[in-house]
Amino acid sequence: MAAPFPNLQSLVDMTNSLHRDRMIESLDTSAVLVKRKENEHRVRSESPTLPAFARLAISSRARIERRMEGPMASISLAPAPAATAGCGSGSRFAHVQQAPEDPIYGVTNAFLKDPSPVKVNLGVGAYRTEEGKPLVLNVVRKAEEQLLADKSRNKEYLPISGITHFSRLSAQLILGSDCPAIAEKRIVTAQCLSGTGCLRVGGEFLAKHYSGPKIIYIPATTWTNHFRIFPNAGMEARTYRYYDPKTKGLDYEGMMEDLRAAPSGAVVLLHACAHNPTGVDPTREQWAEIQHLVRDEKQLLPFFDSAYQGFASGSLDADAWAVRQFVNDGGETLVAQSYAKNMGLYGERVGALSVIVKDPDVALRIESQVNLVIRPMYSSPPTFGAAIVCTILGNKALYEEWKVELKGMADRIISMRHQLFDALKARATPGTWDHIVNQIGMFTYSGLSKEQVEYMKTEYHIHMTSDGRISMAGLNTRTVPQLADAIHAAVLQFA
Ligand SMILES: Cc1ncc(COP(=O)(O)O)c(C=O)c1O
Image (cartoon, rainbow, N blue to C red; front, side, top):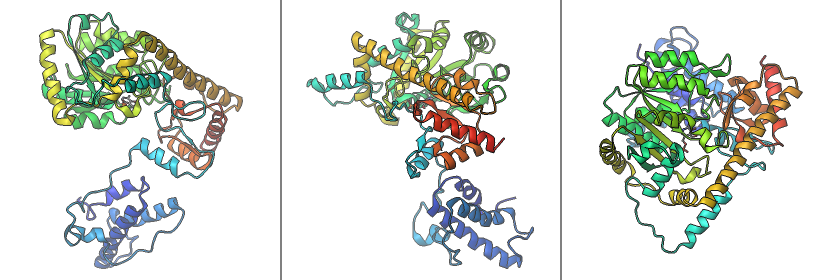
């Protein structure tokens, strides 16, 4: 049945965001429509003859009032502006609906609005020091100083695919300097706008030029942006099972079953390490089986998303192990690398997309087509972040220093895992919490429910995404007891 109040579904969606003014306006508009409909039907709003959508408008307003802890402005029966905006107000954008808030930025917004002095933000996937502050690595500061002191540098445009030296160093970093694909020139690497940009450019290149099915299989639980990036790039996104909430581990059987059922030649997105948000990676034995299925059984095309190299275990080589296994078997592979986390270059937007193929001539042609994807998108990438990366990777002393700092970040996160685990054990918090120490990387996928997360926000001022993902990098020794108290209380409250 067509909805008589076409905007009501988005209105319900808006109850999840806290755009009070927009909601009031839209709800009032809907309420006016409801009142009119009531008169027409000579029925009360509770009447079962009133369409469900109409009743929803009224109840939504009441729900939002409760959430906002205070009444909204009284419902006016005069038509609200949005009702006539299409003609009267003259805006050609009056029909534009409020987009749902991004889940991560939503957490940050709620955190900023929380007046509590003890509030803690465990939503954002960015490293924080023991003092809770953002960290600029010393090695990055040194590289910046070197770059600023070099007066021969200029601000000219980079080539479409960025700094060539950066691309070579990035390929060596992820694939190893002895990788045969590099020696045989079977690789194309382009500097892109951090991990997101690499995935977007890679996705569009595949949508335009891949000879296999233009379908990408994404883990059913994943970094949510994957679900937007690939369809926007022109690929069909489908999911494979990955996370098992019962074991809080890998649903290995489900994953293999789903990949086995995929059309031959489809693309499969694999997290290189430290799967976001679950912190669950396949074991090396499982990777070997996955590789066999991908390469031999189904001829799938692996697209690795490497956002956490070195940040997960503290070792750049260990975290690149799975990618290297695939590339060194000679098969074709795509890799998206981000320097956001491991060099702390979040806002500099530095990343590298590599396409590894079987033939150097094909690689040359691919390079021209990757450039053709980038050129109309943003012409060429920015300079400074990539110059920082080149300075660090190209200088032995700085490179060694980076590895030490990187390990320091990874170790602090691992220590937070142990502290939280011990704190929950000390409180005898019901449930099993082994996954806190077993999961890998920046996040713990806690298994806490939406209600528990909400409770921890209101009662303990702990902010995290509603799926129960905890950014361990945001924790410190001072906040661990607060989080453990919050989890303990939430578990008891919603047993
Ligand atoms: C799995 C995964 N891929 C890619 C990214 C992209 O990050 P960025 O674009 O900041 O490099 C992230 C960031 O959180 C991520 O978690």
